[in-house]
Length: 121
Image 1 (cartoon, rainbow, N blue to C red):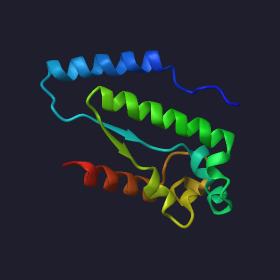
Image 2 (image 1 turned 90 degrees about the vertical axis):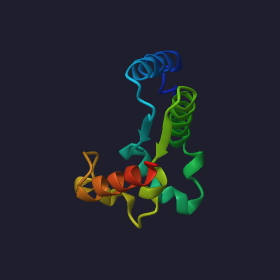
Image 3 (image 1 turned 60 degrees about the horizontal axis):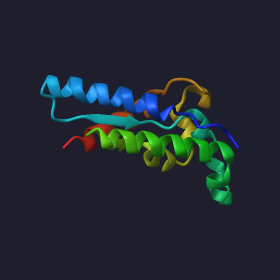
């Protein structure tokens, strides 16, 4: 069993303070973009074996995502989940330089920008 990755109380405080700041500045639209970690994407082959959602790190990372989503929505942010777009690729690791735990390569950023643009309404 892995530890919880998010200090929910602290994260709630950050979101609450950001909500108040954006209210003060009269920002009506607020977005939080969820980008899955390399670690989560690197386990993509487990999906074909029906083991993905049983993997302890995936459970841990899914809990993190769900907590972030819940807190962001509670504070008036639109939650943009990019995960399914990366997993829709034949080899999701192709979004990283050399398929390693690095920044996105142009493909990764292209997908990210398209998902965000599509989510802006």
